[in-house]
Image (cartoon, rainbow, N blue to C red):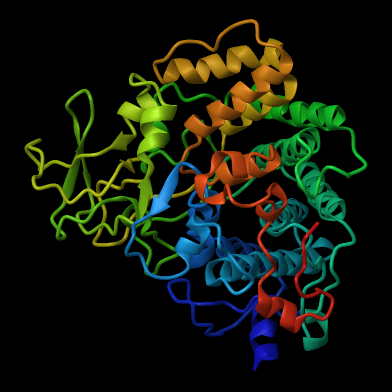
Length: 501
């Protein structure tokens, strides 16, 4: 039975996106499927679909934010989410198991596309685009894996038999990053600059390269566990991060760029806004979760299903779901201690009260704590919304460039982002080390609740000194989560009690 479950996992059998039950009803890995350009596109969409699985999509916040200093779950939320909050994750924690599992489902589907389409008889333009995007998706999933679990198994061939489900463990963490980098370079080579809602292009590949090189450079520089002994030069990798971030920030102003309107970035009707380099193609018109999302319900308070309204400083109102679950709450100390009182990222995007359609505050308030309006769909249909996670956006890469390149190039970028937030410039005259620390702090404010925080803390070896719940641990303990026990049991190549570095 365990082997059957593992085979389903790695062959990428299509699961019901709104259920954790594995219900196979077809897959696209056979030679008899990939016969036409349309088949190639369908196989690629199947690989993209892996990102939408419930526990993978919510893992953006489960893994990226809940274990940090900015968010926490409501106290009566059931399940393993409190293990993430309290830093008591074990190899048997369900949520990290699902995250690991769906990364490999996405990898296997990408592997199938790369294998079947690369040498096939397809229109060259279609082949290049489909294979290029599949290389990006494989890199994306491996980047999520290595930052979360450290050293893990590597497979680059599609799984078609039970014997293929015991992939070897990577020889080092650098081996995984070399695969990620090569995939991104291949994607950059094959893809064009082409904005297409929900898909990736050449710019997305360059943006991911910049993030990967920065993660390696800073992890080495700050001596993060798992990286301190890597045979790389931190400054060389900072330079590579700056090279690719510079392309994203400077070379495509007619396609991607800075959005002067802070709230416009989070408008569900503007998924093609200049900031959005990689964003999921979900919409409230979909027929099942994965085609639409319930993201706002995770953040918004419950008002007994009566629609709520969020009031902004200019007096305008925005409607939101009144049947929210209020799972993801924001730490008071984070809001009141990290943001200036005048910062629009606080005054426009963080809230403690809800209102009726006439702008009157709803009392007694059902709000349990601060919540964010980054994820609100005013035209929701029941629980169905068009709210989407912001997987890669321009300001993220601008901050990558600032951190990697240093003060001379970085000050104008950071100050532009701060200016949009209505606050003053960074203190001038910082040396390189002080400036990089300031940029990482700016990332905390700008990219809050977008799934980046844990990885920024891990790559700078600051988890235990920043997150109170992790303070009892060593930085080595906090560096990676254990590989799920179910996977250890099924794969003899993964040793028990794997320390991941």
